[in-house]
Length: 254
Image: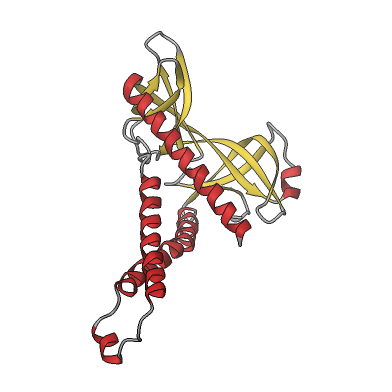
């Protein structure tokens, strides 16, 4: 139990650290960021690859966070740091507020401390057991507060598998109307799985709607060993979702 609690505390600490790092990043863009127009030249794993020119005349090509669809404008406003132009973000996609996770964590801590303190106080005070009539007419505050928090917790946990199943269904639906093209293999290899197994991947490059698309496709380790950089493979992607791609004959999700 102590080991698991330690892991949880470490993870919470890392997430808090990343939140405050995001705060510093947002402050830097607010204080020193420069806005300019960027041209979309590609889509890398669902995010826009942009090309723009800095105030000093330098040319920058970088992938910025935020989903991008082929129906979106081909020119976007970006904000970059003059000392490091590759640190850029879209002005229409500023990212998650840095204070969101600390706020949620503070709410859970305060709620848990309040409920725990109430239960502890009840045990310390003791006293005669209330009558059945009193129990029916006056429910303790801790009991009244527990169930809404419990329902919220269960709902949050259920969102994970529901989100996965929904995404899987949307990916299958996107491939109902698909296109097949030749793609260039950029790289292939293996990586460890979450359960100690092996997962292979193939990174491919192809064109759709006048844009260069790049994505990483999961494959078996045996299939990954059969691909090398600059090889040509047949890929299938959604006609309206070019970012949903698979090797021909393979499932869209592994």
